[in-house]
Image (cartoon, rainbow, N blue to C red):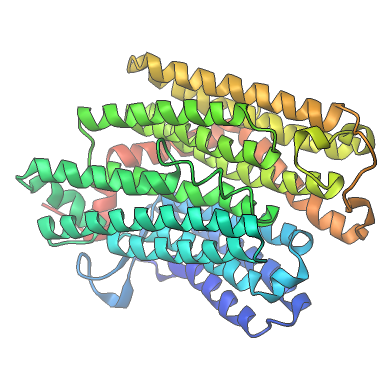
Length: 500
């Protein structure tokens, strides 16, 4: 079904970004417009999600050029869900940024770049053209690089150099793979490619191209062994920026992997073995990396790497229940990772540090805030019935069904290490008495700024509680998406019309 309104989550962020550029020195205006803009985009995202749920896959042909010749935008349940999650995380971070981003960074166009980043994310989720996907990735890289370097502090610059270097390498590999694929098929439309790739006689070159895509998107997703750039960079910017990075940036790489390897390249046994090995090593190395850290933000950064392994594990087992588990975990992870980085910002404001040895006393001084943070932290571990528990059940079931026992062991190890480190964080930051005076400036903040920092944390905590307590709805959604991924005929028909 054709619907030109599906592009609104992209266009609205573009319009708000351009509008905000003209108010560079009007900080109050920028803050109000950004929150308002994100709220409006979230409303349209909810509308798009409900429309796809009720009516099925929606398409839009840019310039009225029929597929596969024009640029196609597609909203199926997978992309509509990602648009909705981006809207929720974007609004939460926009509210948190009111108190979490300094005036000088706002003057350096933080809010316009923030909207450009969200525009790029939404464009990547909605595009049905593989070269257009590359273009949206470049928009994301440029925007995120600017956000990471705002303020110009030395750790930020060092982290940004590692970040942009690895992502540009991934982009080169991605573009090379697109060129080879176009040379083999003469098409860039992903629905058309799903038909033409299976007809190419040179299967060796197709497999090489598939692995190039896996390497390119794998670097962007921070999988083993090319994950080191993430913990070296994500802990350097302010918490508001780290929150949107931790919640969404690596997930767009995982989204691309899932889209490409279910729609275009149906992986053979050898490819699945490689994915399984990468997933297991990502789980283990991310967990072990977190185990030796003393900086809260670096621990959370290694958790991003570790937990990406859960999603790659679901893809590597390539069964409907495994994909459903991976989708459920992605939904949970976007909300929780965005939230824990905002929590780290509050902890920094209170203690003036995120080093575990230098913080403490949070439960004694802020018991109600500590209770909310406890829900966030223990949702990350998958304590039942919180949101992280349910997708792991699916992944373990799939691992035993496919006899992937080594992968099951890696999943178990990652879960235990996550639980151990969260207990350690709780013990150090909340139970332990702080040595010396509190060095942060949280108590000096006006009440409205405290509310602006805590409100988005409570908002995302409520969402994660809904995901855990009303898990049957998310399970139904995840199974729906997994079914569409395993049988892509509806996607192809929606984009190309009836095919032979």
